[in-house]
Amino acid sequence: MNFKNFDKYFLNLFLTLIILIFAVSCQNCTSTNADNKSGKNSYKKNDSIINSNDSTNTKQDTVSKIYLLGKIIPSKDTNFIAVDQKYTSKKGFYLRKETYNAFKKMFDAAQKDGVKLSIVSATRTFIEQKWIWDGKWTGKVLYYGKNIATEYPDPIERSKYVLKYSSMPGTSRHHWGTDMDLNSTELAYYKTENGKKIYKWLSENASRYGFCQPYTVKDSARISGYEEEKWHWSYFPLSSIYFEQYKERITYDDLKDFAGCETAKQVNIIKNYVLSVNKTCR
Image 1 (cartoon, rainbow, N blue to C red):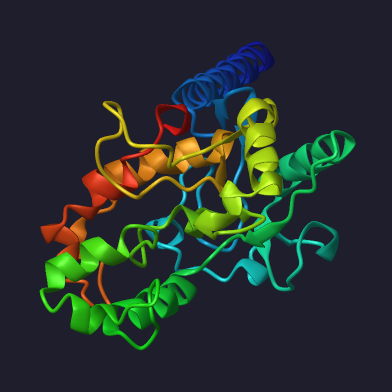
Image 2: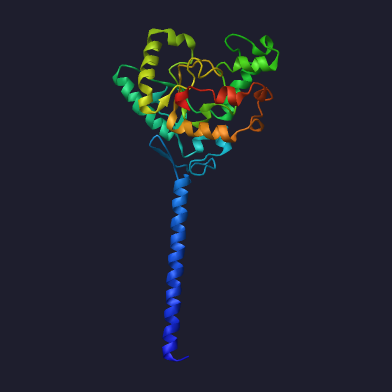
């Protein structure tokens, strides 16, 4: 090979490398843009961007079925945070960080208006919900003064009665770290002057901080499901995402390992209870 041909050979080789590098770069750029458009990198809803890096095998905005079913350990999940006793009378409560930060802002605003909010229940795992459900369903724990196992021997009727105010394990919104019960879960409390004051403030102001009431009075838009719960409030920017994922991914085969689990399908728990919420929480 003479010098002239030698120079021409390396010039062609150099130009070929430049073209290859440019092609690969463009391909990566196209792939990244496609991922962003499809929401693979993040999920934006109500101006909130959700990125998941927790220990529940979540991938970006999509959480695992295990997470949706509450089979988690909040204390070992980096997306959860322990609730300070300033905001509750009990120890050991956890919430998603986003939920907690929003609640603290709502707490401060309520306090300025002379309203004291207190978390009485927060994230509940599958195991914790199973303990609550099994106790009532088997009659080991009285439910509104009744032994449900003897009062309602028919399994379906028994489940329906417990479902007035208690969720089956794997179906509770409390599993997600987005929902909390405030001040009291007793019906009588919200007939008191203080209970009325708290509920009135929440009804008028909670939405400003991203919270909605899932279980309102039943009407034409919510004809089935749990009874009204004036104490239950949900952080919509997150819970609305998990609500959609639950609807698309959880089946009756996933609901098992608790007393009376065979009745889940018979009472249509997913459609009639999990998905039957106030429209502002969907």
